[in-house]
Length: 271
Image (cartoon, rainbow, N blue to C red):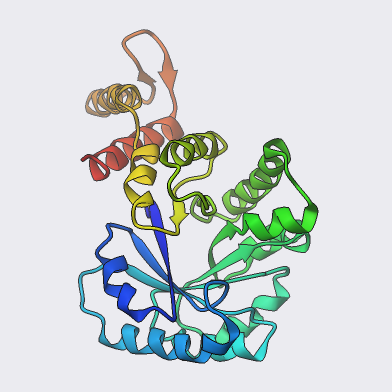
């Protein structure tokens, strides 16, 4: 399960290799917001060249294309759809808008960045070509004039529920724009984790280790998970259907599955 995604502007090809070496699980070459209109054709060409020439063994490379409602966005998709490990689709507002993906080989990730996108989240998440969904919080907050974290949490939970109901991976958090505020980033990650969000996109490599630490299970969480897994293994060896913990609590199969996932994540993110 991916934990960190790092954006890199498509018109800065000299940064592509550095982004790939940053430790991020996924590098997102951005053809949309990070690139001014006059350089978008250049950015697309840079992305195509990099995808064709990239060395093996690195992180996944996704491309955020321009809005599929525009000719430029559809041209972006045609250029990178068979080369990228994933395509990020901005401003998705309905499942119907995703029918253009029929000729795209790459997994598609829908970005919900408007009121219409939130209202249509369940249908978008359920679309057969959608591999994941995420929030574009800055655009959404601007459209709705939201300044309250409580109000934004309400919208985040709607997307978390839509993704879970569709059987998609957990929803990653949107970018934290204050690159120098590592304490604020860590606190924001902790709050998002409590809502069921998992992982985060970053706009600078220095944010990657902070995000990894924030989503790494704590020592207490790992210890509790290990206790549950050990109890489950004892029950399996004894042929027992119920899993009992030493303190007398019983846990069911979904709890055991979550415990195993917690241990796997802790091992993966161990420093």
